[in-house]
Image (cartoon, rainbow, N blue to C red):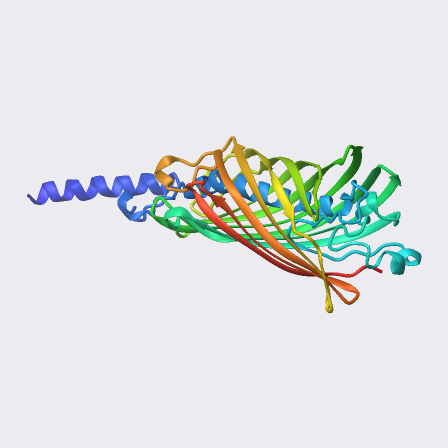
Length: 374
């Protein structure tokens, strides 16, 4: 017995000596069950929510460009056009400011507004937007906020060109693979745009922009960060049909974005490869402009709209994650608002709800703004 014990101790000492000679730690190794397994949910967050972020920012930029280029193409004194949601602060050539100050109610009133329809040769604009998302089954919720601005110049009676820049902020809480997490992003954008008056009451505007973003992701206690580069293309075709004092504005929107997300290693030392996300949206529907009302405190314009929207992308999370698959969805967007010309400025209030019928999320947007020409 004594001899067997001595031999076992000797073999143990030999193993320890060899390990020390090879530089191998002789500390006790914890069983595999004691080591936290890194979650794959950070990758699922990217695959699920990236397309939503890309298209939301693209739509905000598109609306800003539309505001700057839109014109009353019908020539009727009752033709009224109201811009998309957000606040917009604009100023034009100083020598034309007084003349144009009351020529538009948000985008147009009484045959003027926008660079294509107004008398100004240039204009600057800024637009802000905030939306809240609620995912079905509490899979995600959070906000997306945008602030964009630009300067446009009318180079001919039928063509406008301009530049834009902006900042965006995103914050989502997620529940993936039964693990709580988060996805946050900030980014800066620059781009160019144009608006063209086609005749027959139709106009087209288009833009292309670049966005550089910083992302932070978290799943449980695992965290990661990466950068991304994005190209966005947007186009908007609109018409106008007068029905007495009412105006019907049929619209078709197209958005496309491609983002290259860098590879990164998360805090659990798991490597995530680089990822390219491509996403698009097609929107079709009318906006109905109610007759403008003159009151003792100013002019007021109510409007409503309904858009059918289809989104597509090349990214999908793993089914086990429980996160929404937004690679192929269709939904309804409803919006309404009031634009009021009070004094020398324009107050804009809008509310909208979208994601209706998608089966993945519902989102709400609200804006209050003020616009004053100079």
